[in-house]
Image (cartoon, rainbow, N blue to C red):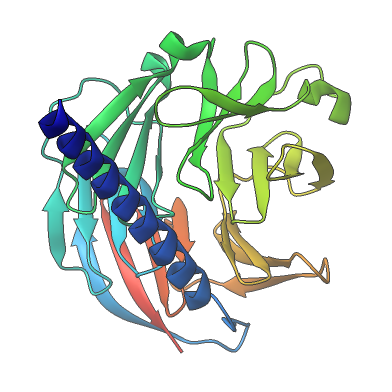
Length: 287
């Protein structure tokens, strides 16, 4: 019995150290976004072009680029376009979204399967969770929470639910229909910036909640698929133009993108711009 007690204690210690590592790293990533600024006078220098037929791109605070191909392969590239990792697990289904807000632990969402796969920073399989086993009728979107749990929007009862990785529900909102006049609600993107939870429905705008699921307001930005928050600015691409919406001043500015004719998606980090085009992805240095 004493031997098993020591082993259990060791496993608990390992898990605690890992979660501490994630928390410290998340704080470091938050500091990377401080004092970021981009404007109409910014210049862009092409530094890499990656040939790939992709449907989505995401980037993390370290500048790494993640590309989901139209055949649901996942690739990780450095900020200068060097291939770092490829998906190395077998999982059937269409990748709906990818949360890379913590580069040490990625969340891959399969909406059709109502499940999430967890990957490490080398895209190696670390585990998964079938949301149907934990009273989630149908998730339309998911996100990593500030404390490395899960946010899920359940369209079955129109509630935001926070889960731990063992599937237990730790928080849930009221029915969000009371915060909007819409008959249909289908968020497809969520983002936790350690202070607020942003829930995006392209037809309604971006609903903002605190970390206890209390509704704050709706940002009237419609027709966007996803966005990136850096400092006090919310960046998004629409109609081949990059926009920066200031969350404090509520002012918006537009930034003309380089060679924008075939852009279908974009992402931005502190000194990098990433453009998804037909059959390739471009990486630009921002000056």
